[in-house]
Image 1 (tube, rainbow, N blue to C red):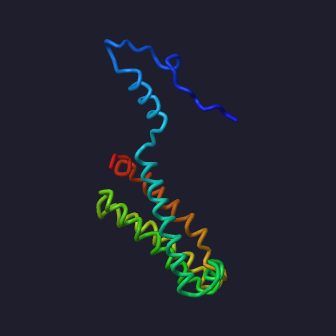
Image 2 (cartoon, helix red, strand yellow):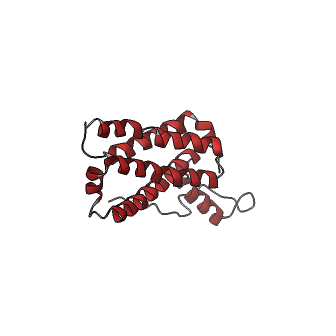
Length: 162
């Protein structure tokens, strides 16, 4: 098992008290530099967390309204409705969070399109009886890939500090 790094005067660069920051400031700087997460990836993780929260809430509400015992039963008995509920359940909180964080309407609507458009092939799989269940897990994976693709395509907009 790896040992946690300990900070001491030996591990820090030499500090002259007359010229630079105190030892506490140097330790704080070293600790914070190890925790830095670029804005693009911080935004990505925020969006994934918001989507997951929306999916869980939507799934719980859907299961309780329909009156079945599990999400698997929902995806086989109501596949179209489950896919549409997941699309809305991921998109609405994510767009709300983006607007709250100051990303603007254009970026929010583009990201909403990246969440909603991938549901179409999965709906077609259900409608043409290729699959009997909604394949929500695959749909969610595709939306995360679409979101990351859009963020990387527009890296300059998603890499700025918010």
